[in-house]
Structures are given as C-alpha cells and as structure tokens.
Length: 293
Image 1 (cartoon, rainbow, N blue to C red):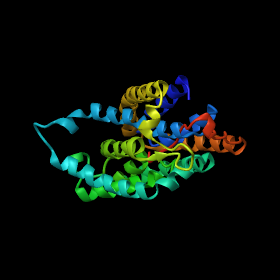
Image 2 (image 1 turned 90 degrees about the vertical axis):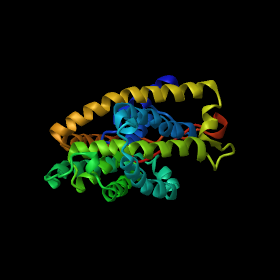
Image 3 (image 1 turned 30 degrees about the horizontal axis):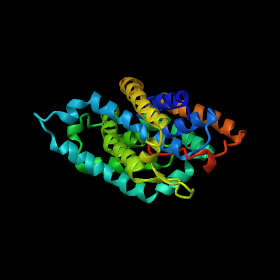
Image 4 (image 1 turned 30 degrees about the vertical axis):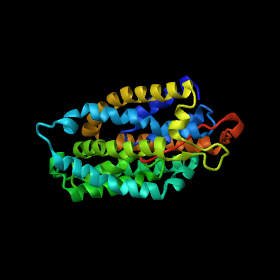
C-alpha cells in the first residue's frame, strides 16, 4: 500500500462510514479497483482507520458525551446495553465475516438487496413517536443493537441496519440516525481495539502478527496509520452533517437507488474481472476487514 492508496481509502471510509451504503463494501471495492492485492495489513488498516471516524462523532456531539454538568448516566447505560449483541455475535462469527470480505460478488449483491429495502423504508414507518435520544428506553436501545448485528454481513451497512432498527421502534429518521451515530462509537471502538491489539492476523501464515505489531513494523506503516485516521476524521465530520440534512429532507430513496446502481455496476465489473492475487509471505504480510458498517 502506498501513500496515495491509503489517502483514497481513508477518504472513502470517512465518506461512507455513517451513510447507509456500507463503508466496508466501498473500501473493499476501492482497493480492488486500485488493483491492491489482499494482505493482512490492508485488512487491518481498513478496520483501524475507523478510529478517526469514531472521533468525528465524539467531536460533533461532544456535549452529549462529555456534558458532566448535566450528566446523563442513562445515555451511557443505553449505549453499553445496545453494543452487547454486536460484541458477542461479532466474536462468534469473526472468521466467517472475514471469509466473506474478499467476495466482491456477494458484497455487491448485498448492496443491491439493501438498496431495494431502502426504497420502501420511508413508506413502512410513517408515524414516528420518538424524536429525542432521552425518550429511548433501554429495551429499545438493545433492540436497535440486535438490528445493528445484521451489518455483520459485509455490504449490509451498520448505519442502515441500526437506523432502520431505530425506525421500527418508532424513532424519527433524525433520531434514528443520531442514535446510530452514538452507538457506532462503542461498537467501532471495540472492533478497532480488537483488531489492533487482540486479533492475530495471518494465523495461517509463517509470520502471524497483532495489528499493532504490523503498524510499528516500519515507519511507513506508522505514517499510513496516522494519515489514514486523520483524513477519515476530517472527511467524516463533513459527511455526518451532510447526511443528517439530506436524510431529514429526502429520506432513504436516494441512498436506495445509489446502492442499486452501484451494486449492479460492480456485479457486472467483478463478474468479468479476475480477483487480484494475495501477496505471498515473501512479499510481506499486509491486510483486510471489518464489520457492520
């Protein structure tokens, strides 16, 4: 991975992480279109730069997270309860999720399927009754947390799954989107920490490594890791504000048609293009992955 490729992947992550279009799918497609071979560092990089996107939410909604004068203990309880399903199921299905990440045909198909669903979401949930996070009960938060787990299939979109989950519970589009953003912080932080400090990448190779070992392996990896997170952070700041405005005014149809069109184009492209070969051990370990988005 060179610097330009890392910058492009970080821009894609920042743009798509909180949109209902699957950041995992878009980073995978982008890497494939750039001809990047699958490697352990690439997989880990795609997960680790989510940390920058996480920080964008903390900064944009800092009063929600750090207003200790009007401390809302229930807010943290709801997030903690809602993230539990993803933590448990994510650990159980980690290997199966990773196995699908290189299957661009399957992920493209999920983009199309999810796009069709988004075309009808606004018609299905016409009478929301909850317009504020404070009105969300712990039970509702946990239910949304289970909906979020649908995004374990790459191409589904963590954002889309959790927002739709919120709307099934009576949340307005804006309230569902914002709670999806809040829930992303503990969810993606857990995934990032696991991928960088706990998970062993390349277990079937002669040189398995933890994520942080690959990062500090050389100065170039350190630079790419820092650069990727900074760019993802900046781009996500803009993307979140824009998304809330567009979603509130126009709903999900735009994103549904976008997914369908892009998914069909990619199905045709990858259906006629051989996948890039993975790097051999001699060429060094480099990377994959995630989730929900």
